[in-house]
Length: 154
Image (cartoon, rainbow, N blue to C red):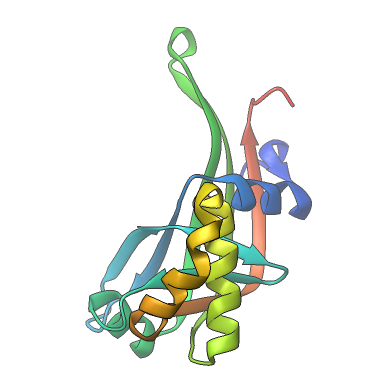
């Protein structure tokens, strides 16, 4: 990181990842070109989970090259009088792996649903029954995480 004065510790970065509204996962496509997509993520220790379709462009990319980078943005505040934006961010680098075992898939989906659909958890079991077989789950094993804060007075 160029601006060491903005660098934050791992616990700060994990907090940003755990609280961001969504994350953008970057990868390399099968032709070596960059590709990124916004995702709903949930973390469990050193693993970041996301759900997706069982096939498609993103899956082709991940199967071809599982190195990924995740960008998470936390609180932001426009400061027009200074021509800037204050923000918190976390960058996660790691490797993505498809989750195929039902128990881990359900665990990951529960984490994601508790984060994004907490008010509807009473319907979780019936949703799993209906859609587990057609839902893809991937996990990213975190190799490195860094945090940054630009002026957010915290």
